[in-house]
Length: 411
Ligand SMILES: Cc1cc2nc3c(=O)[nH]c(=O)nc-3n(C[C@H](O)[C@H](O)[C@H](O)COP(=O)(O)OP(=O)(O)OC[C@H]3O[C@@H](n4cnc5c(N)ncnc54)[C@H](O)[C@@H]3O)c2cc1C
Image 1 (tube, rainbow, N blue to C red):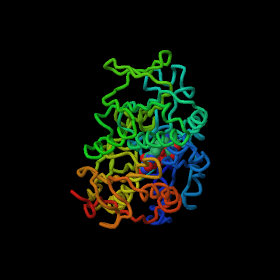
Image 2: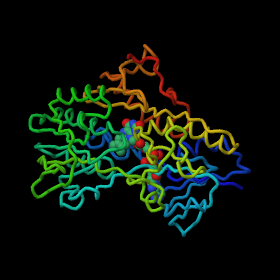
Image 3: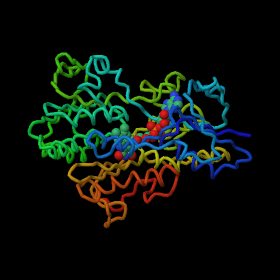
């Protein structure tokens, strides 16, 4: 019997399990998936919790519901990956699993301890919050419900972060939320980012930057945070700039899983070096990487994990048959950007093409508008939760192609 071992039962790992169970003969292969956590969180939904649009229960389901019956789900921490021995150590019962093929899908996670004073300066979860974790989003919701106003600073510690548009969505929704509560004129909103503009890609950055300005949100670009001084209530950059806050919403450093670092498999942020077109590990030919865990220079997003899926599955199967790999992953990313007041924007891009205006997915028809606010983009974002639980995670067909297309895009 051969073993396909999948590490991580989040977005990427769950999709791989659901696809591979149909591809591999169960008389020859055992499929095992390991995760420490029994609960699957729909992470895009965390954005809505601070504003009371979702409550924490709306983004949780048991992981077991999404893992096929003939895949062995083990709930345990992963201790160590030993690629030279083709084995993985778990903390539960000190179990050792030998594998023939390994898929790493351990994602990325916030590490607030990486920024001096953020976690240990006395303000964490008092007047300093994150919304990238279920607890953080829920605590921030409790805080915002009763907040009377002041200076709210949203700060990205360093790039890359997962869902790089989420901080912008948070800002747009905050503007809407404070309007709804009738206190917008009592809240000053500041966005301090290490980027030189609102976003990484020039055309989208210009449009999104314009939206920040229109909504009276102040942008502080090229702000590389050195420390949080919660006594003075300022964040301080390496070049000694200070920004004062009453409420700090931080998107802390995002890093790959600690087990990747412990196992010597990652770069300085614990992301696994991977061939950006084939999704095979750069170091080990029987190791494959999906989603946020790898260092492919595209967005860390659920949509990206989904666009990686078919290429990764095809290449693993081709490798099993001794065939040449196909270099077909093009970095395709697709993100709905909630912009408040029941409007949204959609961006679609890849390694080579930045977000352009147009219609998506049907050229000329849409219903979604690219790089432009529209109510249908907002409804697309809201419907996505249903599609995630019912189609995407189960490896079903989505109406979006894995490779980006220029059809429907205007140059
Ligand atoms: C606030 C927010 C908003 C977002 N919005 C969007 C959006 O609008 N659109 C979009 O496409 N994406 C969005 N994302 C990003 C998206 O959720 C992630 O990119 C996606 O879930 C990545 O999938 P993954 O499989 O790589 O990792 P994950 O889904 O995070 O899964 C990783 C799994 O590995 C497990 N694991 C890690 N280490 C260990 C260990 N040592 N032992 C055992 N188990 C371990 C974890 O428990 C976890 O279940 C958002 C994310 C956040 C936080």
